[in-house]
Image (tube, rainbow, N blue to C red):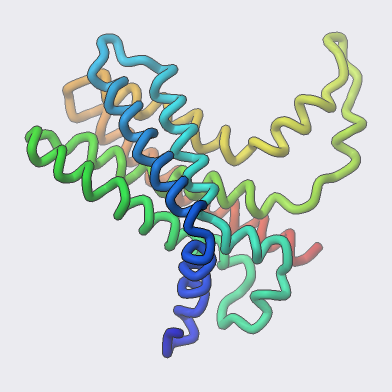
Length: 225
């Protein structure tokens, strides 16, 4: 156990993953497969949006599987009552372990491949994409309990909105993370110039921060409820 109270949450998240080695190994394998799909898409001309979206979706699933500690705290907020931080800040703390695991598992081999190829552009995209996917996973983790009102929906000329509301309730964090990064990553892979890469990195960093703040807001509302 760590000697500093501030590190207890990180230590607990690591233990949650080590106690579920199948989850950890599966997440790493999914992340490697996601990276391979995006790399394959980058070598195609034109760049396949479908392959990029599939790769990012698998990467999101890997990030979600690594957020087990956050899920446990969201299911039972009493677990974190004695921690020396506010509950709404837990979303930021819980992002550390998934980001580090993914960066170590995927970033190290990707860095070696980029150095050998003499192109560090994919590495920059990877570094900014991982926090975005983890942020999207945490948005879903802290979404709260399912509301029966979603089953009612609203009647429109094209049908009731209940099914769409339920899908977005489950996949809102996924959509917020995967959809914009699909556009940004595809654009950066499509053009050899620096402008699309810089745009992807800057917007991706802002998106990661925004998703973290959104997850923290959801956590605060969850605790208040």
